[in-house]
Length: 402
Ligand code: SF4
Image (tube, rainbow, N blue to C red):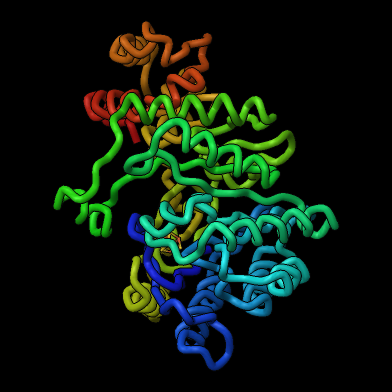
């Protein structure tokens, strides 16, 4: 579920967000309160009118900065999901939170309404880096936030939590990055997400890059940074279960695993993508167009047409996409199964393998019977190159590729 509100837009971010200003706290009477209330009303209506489905085993409230919503507002969204679908026993209920957007009392409030996992947008323990990213919080806020999360976990109110870091930033070098990793490990997060910086259209970073004010690191250094991350985190006991995700035993995110497995999920809110029965459906990315889209869905004329959300009309996730998400996971894909699902014969699968042979020869792609996976860390570090080659081949494959 997408909660789009943020204090300000970070320089690298192209998510559909609504900046409310640095001083907005989302509370009653604050400048953003009316915007938030109006949006929550739309979300409630979207949930209430969704087709029914099985109880939810995981809920992820992401953003944006969902911790700008009060515990009462988060609780009301969880109640709406529970009323409509039901929450499965032991469901993982995750909330994305940003340092400096909550205090200990607010955290306790979220746990009281059912949140049992937190994903903390830390990004860096270096104030200069945080400033260069356009982040609002500073290292002291991050350290305070991780201390509160550790305490909440120790008291049993929080099952797990994750810390986000960004890697391969302009000017990043191995030694300072190692210090960042040590700081992160020192906070004892059960789960770590380490994302590679990517430059997205329309962001401040893209403009600065175009004006020559930003210099990206080269591919070799990026691969070395990833290798360092993988080695240091694995020494510290973290399993590398997906290209950007590491977890202590028992703390891999259920949400991530469901999402990457190609299983279905609902999505609610502006910019959210739903694929309840495999078929993807993206919502518009601005509040106005999202509101219009919802209104048209509820118009009497629309009710007579087959609903796009109708599970009977599901088409299945694109097969090439299943390759992409599968190869980013440590366990890789069952190539024979995916080929069969796409209507490919053994001969075509062999052609694809020949196409990817240079990667196999370099030990980046491992073919173990029917299972194809990328080696860790070398293959995962160069996953984009492997995936580009795979996609370049794919349209030449049979039309039944989707
Ligand atoms: S806080 Fe997160 S969602 Fe909001 S602008 Fe920054 S990166 Fe984007």
